[in-house]
Image 1 (spheres, rainbow, N blue to C red):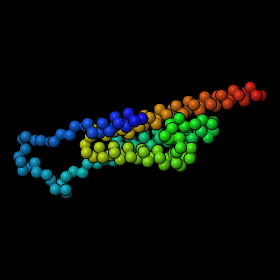
Image 2: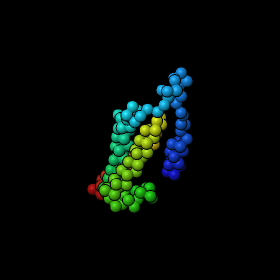
Image 3: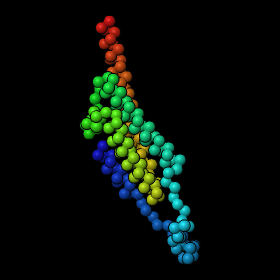
Image 4: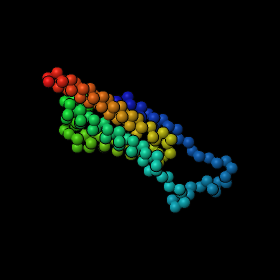
Length: 156
């Protein structure tokens, strides 16, 4: 997890920043426009909302499958850093997870506002992590359910 966080930080800070130049324009037009004339860059558009929706839905999948496994099948949280939070219940899990995801979206929004073409990578990477662990949780739940059914069949 530390490597993923380090990779995201390096990706943000290593993106090139280029000044725009127009050789064929007169110098008069190169002067910065007043605040009223500058086009405002729209950060929250359809793409951003789509990426944010994917991130939040994957986080819900991960959190819900974690709590179903813990509460209904006696499984445990495998991440030692999240285990104390998850053991406090759904509200604590959602508070921490949504806080982290909101931070990722805010950083991504700043990157998009500054014109980075890689603004979408951190939320999509984190979405992949949530979907992976949600899928893994679901497989553990299915295995625990099958094991419970086999035990019930043997006891009858």
